[in-house]
Image 1 (cartoon, rainbow, N blue to C red):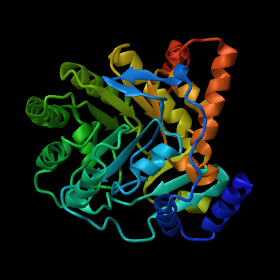
Image 2 (cartoon, helix red, strand yellow; image 1 turned 90 degrees about the horizontal axis):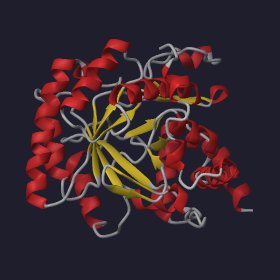
Image 3 (cartoon, rainbow, N blue to C red; image 1 turned 60 degrees about the vertical axis):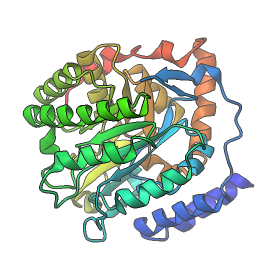
Image 4 (cartoon, rainbow, N blue to C red; image 1 turned 90 degrees about the vertical axis):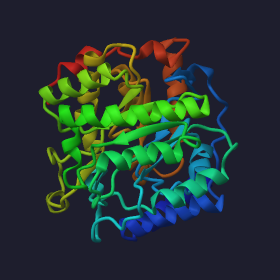
Length: 363
C-alpha cells in the first residue's frame, strides 16, 4: 500500500513543473509523513572514510537540500550521509525560471539553477538547531555569482560552518555560474586550495577535531585537466574528491527538444561518463585518497559499479526524481543481496575490482 501511495504521489508531482515539485518534496520530508527506512543496518556496508564512520556508502548529493532544511529527514530515508548546499555567503535568487527540465524518456534532468540559496545565515541557523542530532551532514560551499573575490567566499564558508559540518565540499564544478569552472585550472586551483586548507587548519586548531575537505569536479575535463587536478589534490594532501558534477554533454539523449536547454545534465545518461572520470581519477591519485562517486546512480547495481570503478562512497539525486523516496532503502537492500552473491565480508573488498575496465575508457 505504501509503495502504491508513493507511486501515486510521484505521478502527481510530475504534473507540476519540476521546481514546484521539488519544493513540494521538501515540504513532504518536513512533514514527517514519508515512511522511514526500516532495514536492519548491514555491517558489511559500513566503513570509515576520511576519518568519518559511515553506516553505509549511499549519500544524498548536494543540490537537493540547498538550504539545509531536511538533512535529518533524508537520513531517515536510509542515506548513510547527506550533503546540504551549495551555500553561498549571500542569498541569491539564481538564474531566471524555468531552469529545471525533466527528460523523462532519458531518466535525466537538466538544470541551470545557478546556486539559488538563502545564504550562510539561514543555513547556519538550521544546522545549529540540529546540533547533537547525529548523522553525517556535509556542507557544500560555493561563491556568489557577483563576488569580486571568490576564494574569500569559500574561506567564509569554512569559517561559518566549521563547528557544524561533518565535512566540506568545495564546489568549483557547477556549469551554471559563469567562470566558476575556471577554478579547476591548475594555478587557480592551487591558490584556492592553499587558502581553503589554511582556513581549515585554523578551524581544526580552534575546534580540536578533524574537518575533511572534498573537492567536487566536473566530468567534462580533458585528460590533461584530470592530471592537473590530481597533482594539486595530492600536493595539498586533500581529504578526497567528489566525481562528478553535471555535464554539458548531450550525447545519446532521445529528447531533442529538452536536450537543447542550457545547463548541466544529470541522471542516467551521466553514469558512464562520470564513472569513467571516477576511475581515471582513482588511477591518478592512487588507492589511499577517498573518492565519492556521483552521476546516474539509480540502483544497487549502479552503486556497486561505482565502487568497483574506484569509489569509496556514492551519492545520488536525479534518479530519485524518477524512483521516489523509497529508492535509498531499495538500493541498500539490493546491495546486501549483491554482497551475499559475492560472498564478501565488506563492500570495500569490491572497490577497484573493475577499475581498469572504466579507467581505460575514452572521454
